[in-house]
Image (cartoon, rainbow, N blue to C red; front, side):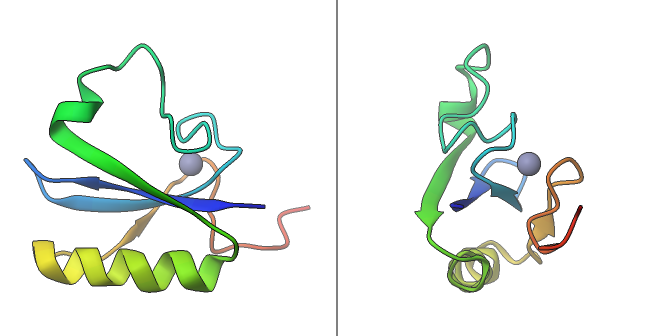
Length: 81
Ligand SMILES: [Zn+2]
């Protein structure tokens, strides 16, 4: 499983996703939202959640925010079944 995060720059926010999340789409995002490329950027994929979180925290600090978790895929929860 791969992990990604999306960093918004205009309205600073960092959101962590699992690669299989439909909002993430393995770092491609939702294809209908081409404007997303102008407002932020996907980073990933990271082979485990710890690496993704570490990178997300680094970017978040630069933006002055705390990393958030996608409420659809919730990447921090490894045992969702
Ligand atoms: Zn997600």
